[in-house]
Length: 178
Image 1 (cartoon, rainbow, N blue to C red):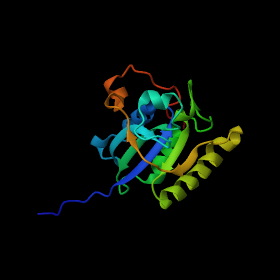
Image 2 (cartoon, rainbow, N blue to C red):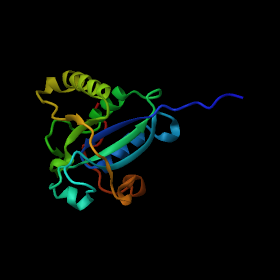
Image 3 (cartoon, rainbow, N blue to C red):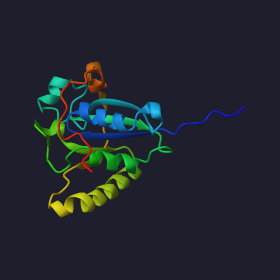
Image 4 (tube, helix red, strand yellow):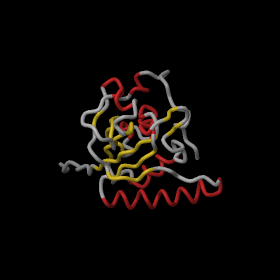
């Protein structure tokens, strides 16, 4: 009889435009059923100034929250660095407070780190991605790298939205760029 394998759990938090598309592309490439490291996701709000914000309030821009994705992952299967690099591949990190036609601080590009190690990794990967993919185009990554604050899950109908509504709105920047 073998002992149960203990899963190590970490949390990664990313904002890159409409949270539906961010969640959708991560789960398409790291489906939990295929043991690629992502265990669970939730879309929600972070980085703002009010408690218990709702979708309409966040969309008004008055709370300074970002629409974000919270990922629970096993770092023994997928590294935080790999998730950060994938995040950059799947949106346009050079547009300030905007992805495609979605505009406002709620659509900003941000990495909300959950530990000093995550901060260091996010900064290193950002520098590498900047040099490899954006310097030659003369564009600069505007992604914020800030400490994670309080997390608020979005309303239930937002969770896994594009899986439940395959013809729903998806920002055109949410695709693999390289």
